[in-house]
Length: 419
Image 1 (cartoon, one colour):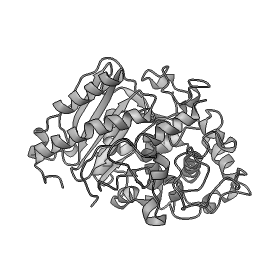
Image 2: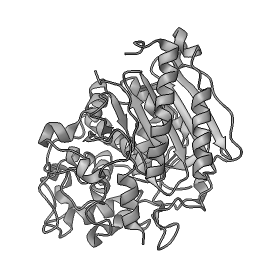
Image 3: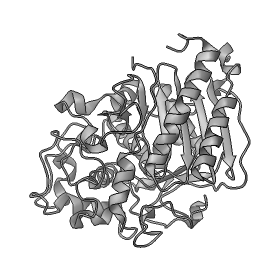
Image 4: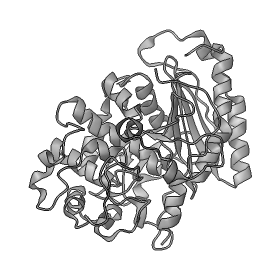
């Protein structure tokens, strides 16, 4: 099985270009299939009827579209979909490329993490969860020998000390995280009580990316909310109107030897995904570009969607805070290795990778090449999805196109506008 290549892909996805910035029935829910030929660019628009800033109508994404198309041709990719959003302007550009329409549905791998983190952070906003409290107060009845001392914030920052994807992606006591059978609750219980003390490290000492810590966090969310992940996820983001959003556990689709390749049987149709009560919390999201753009816009607008508030402003800020630096002086560098681009996302918050070289830039890249990012200095976010078998391809695409998007905003708003 190609678990090791999966880890390499996920950890090398962070190739980035220099940029500026400061932070001042498929699966588990969802709907909608995409496909067909590319095209269909969208123009600037903003919910709520507020007047657009002059720059909103002056944005030129022609060079961006050309850069994406050139990248697809160079790398032999069938197509892509993209969305760009701005805090004041709303969705300013949506586009399909090659064979794919703007609203094609994609599996996005680890670009699930910031979405899943939002579910747990909303529970904290409501006072149902203390992110920094020992989880024993929520999971104490799950059995003896549990990991009662661990905190949800440690899990969402890849700092829990559990055996991770980078340590051993096929660690036997945690293999339920890849299975469609059983339930998320069953899997979380198994991870909680697993006899793994000889393999774990103390929490909040090192950054170890991904794995069962995310499934454990999802199980806590289900237990507190009293509802399955699919329903909890839909309720969390109901105000954003994101009907394509759903979770599955796709890692058995391709069979042994190709478990972490993009499943060719998916074809952008959620009906082709396995139905499961054990979705992959860290990597099972499927969604189209316009809906992911709405979630990025929510983060730009401090937790507010057109239909109402999803997260408090403090919650969105906390998700972007470089927790591993603040809590234990950590870095992702030992996990990602040296990237071939200019920038390494050396920090990590709750679901967001943090660009320490360019404060105000955050990303949540995924296995198959999906790449969402925020640039808070320019007040925009963007998401590009492809159907690749290497996260490194998404990182290279980000490095190629982010300077082009930056230039579009700088030209429309002026060198200091949006800061």
